[in-house]
Length: 141
Image (cartoon, rainbow, N blue to C red; front, top):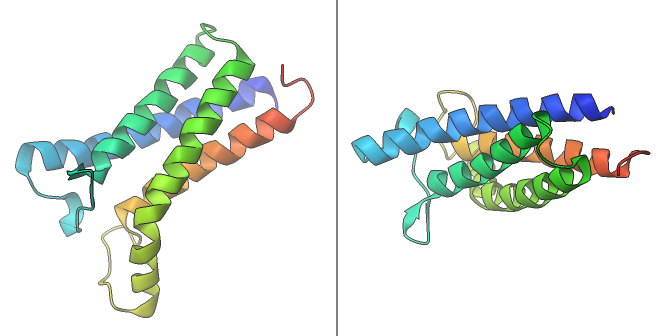
């Protein structure tokens, strides 16, 4: 993986994550309902999508700074690895029971096929995997 590929991929994935979680957070904040008629998991008294938005925003800002040459490659990869790893754990905590129930047939069909937490998990996992991969490539520093 080249540095340029990582810069672009991390930026695009984090932008998509910010847009998706921002939409979910905005719907919840302004209408007090959850998007797509889904349940809205609560974490520390707040909707989980707010925390997902904050994590994606950190990834986006870090990736944007990297793309603009305002931070070192190794530093940005470390930050993205840490916060995307947190995102994997966070979204996975909420997505696992939902996906398990979908596979068991006890959770109804979702608008996009999977739950929104599962999509958050996928985006966090993609950023995490490319970040770990970038760390392990020759010329990382």
